Image 1: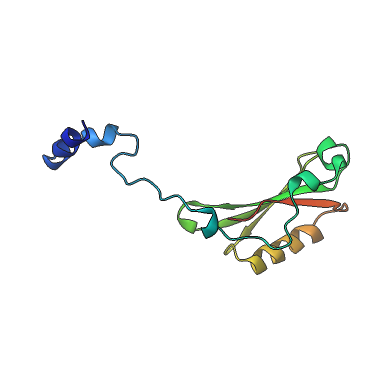
Image 2: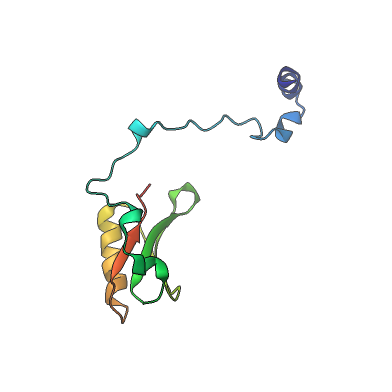
Length: 122
């Protein structure tokens, strides 16, 4: 079947566009040995129970969002209790830039931060 579709593509037709990946190659999956390891990482299962109860302010989740093509970067800080969201635009996703933007967000809010939950950073 695929041989017919590729032959059809060679003749200038577009059956390949109906394939799942539209004729594009599959992504290469990374091995666990290729991934970057975070030193002194504490698992999410060791987090305080009060964080999951969502009963007091100050327990935050932090994440970065990257636009397609790595053209712009956002740092998003969300309070788990009231879903208060602070968003800051960054010129890149380097650690120093993320720390500077987080400090800016901390200085612009009016309540104490108690815990931070971060992903492993990709």
